[in-house]
Amino acid sequence: MNVTPAQIYILGGGFGGLYTALQLDRFSWKTSLKPQIILIDKNDRFLFTPFLYKFVTQELQQWEIAPPYLKLLAGTHIRFCRGQ
Ligand SMILES: Cc1cc2nc3c(=O)[nH]c(=O)nc-3n(C[C@H](O)[C@H](O)[C@H](O)COP(=O)(O)OP(=O)(O)OC[C@H]3O[C@@H](n4cnc5c(N)ncnc54)[C@H](O)[C@@H]3O)c2cc1C
Image (cartoon, rainbow, N blue to C red; front, side, top):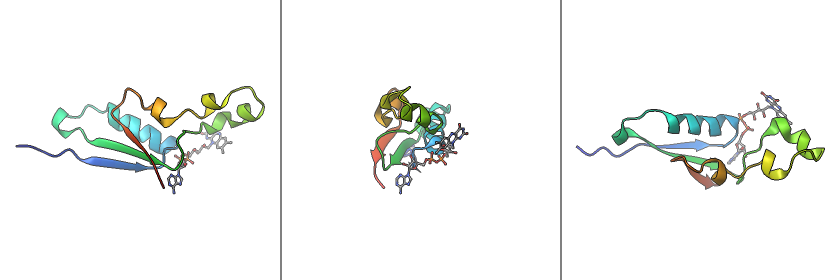
């Protein structure tokens, strides 16, 4: 019997959304049940807020505190969608 994999849409790629997506992707699903995970955010970059001050004080560069989702999710099966 063919089972269509579920789709899981996660709205907001902050700490909560991003880490939920990564945990779900790492979960040991039965191959046929592995859901398609879609992460949606209005921005194209994850903002690492605890180090925001290091950006303001020029200790870190933008790519270090705000890496693009596409880069963070490379090597996973998570699809990123930019939207509201
Ligand atoms: C300067 C600063 C420093 C901090 N330092 C620490 C710390 O050291 N330790 C600690 O534990 N916590 C810290 N925090 C708090 C921490 O950042 C938050 O608790 C955490 O980010 C909350 O996670 P979240 O996923 O709920 O929300 P967020 O991280 O705010 O993520 C929400 C995401 O949803 C997206 N979004 C919102 N609305 C929409 C929409 N309509 N459509 C699409 N996307 C949308 C946003 O772009 C964002 O990516 C800090 C916060 C700030 C501002």
